[in-house]
Image 1 (cartoon, rainbow, N blue to C red):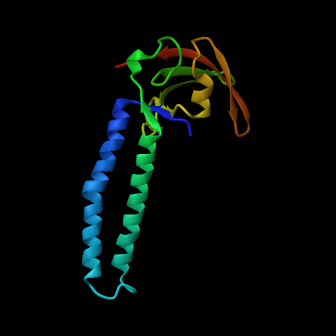
Image 2 (image 1 turned 135 degrees about the vertical axis):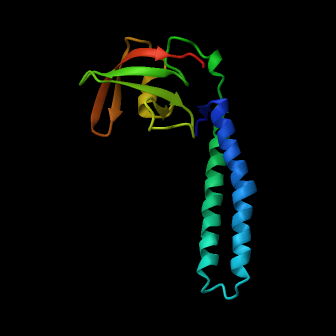
Image 3 (image 1 turned 90 degrees about the vertical axis):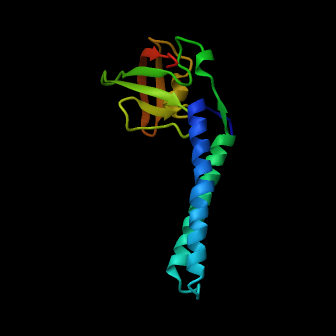
Length: 161
């Protein structure tokens, strides 16, 4: 698997999440398991089984986040070229089918967020992949599950605030 770019902030956030899960949440679950085990017969102890399941799910989440960290490299956005779409750019694009404009920021694993005014999407997404290296005025075709969509790069905000 190809390594994915990530900002220092995104990397530190994931690392802190792993630390919190390992140092705070795991010991709490282990304590709950010990309490449930002390109640006796484990074969019919729902609390014991629920906590063991929670422990397994938490460990899976920790493993997933550790893999994200291992598969990422930290990018200093201030050293990236200006005026073209790169990691960390906020790009305004226009859908050529309906002239609607949308803004996207291209981010790394764990930084994606689809709820804001500017959607933060992964650099590995089909849209980001198609737009990488493009300049304002460039047009791209993006493969979709049902056909393709055509977009034009309207503007790039690549300031490293």
